[in-house]
Amino acid sequence: MRCVSCHGLSLVVICQGCHKKLLSPTITKRKVGTLEVVSLFKYSTIEPFLLTKHTASGFRIYKYFSKQFIRPFITKFAAEIDEYVTMIAIDEQVRSGYSHTAVLSHYAKSPKILTSHASLLAQNSISYAGKTLQYRLDHPRDFSYTGKREVEAILIDDIVTTGVTLQEAQIELSRHGVEVLFALTLADARD
Image (cartoon, rainbow, N blue to C red):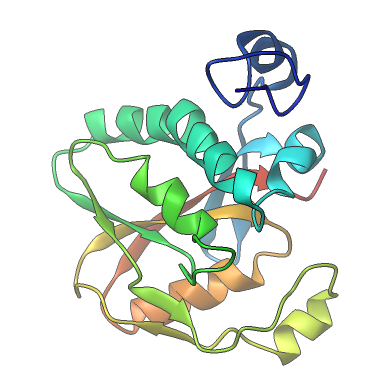
């Protein structure tokens, strides 16, 4: 296999050298309405990797990011809690053969963190890529939640831009008694 960054031979999708050189997390937090959003990287730091999400190699890259960065964060969080928490990925619709948010949540499994797959799905499949805040507000995702009620949860997504999607998800979940503790994203597009 070849490293997707330097194209050198590697046993993993991103070689150890590129990992050390390119992938140093810069954890940031910001409030989006009442929701705290924790991001592991600045968007510009990992943009080429994020842009693979609808490609065949994207599955391996998102799996790598989940195992290397999201899982350790979730494991540390799980060690500090007494109760189980549910991890809910934003809109696990399958595109290009897989769902990038499902990959993120699946490979981040940790003790005391229960994964609820395909329980929060958008009924509106409009793409927000490159769209303005007003466009996003005028075209809501219209989420539908079918998971467990009355639980505490962590929302998982790849990128936070304006936060509209995360806020809309939080509102839908609250209608079902789900308390969102925070959202965890790979990247914050607000550099």
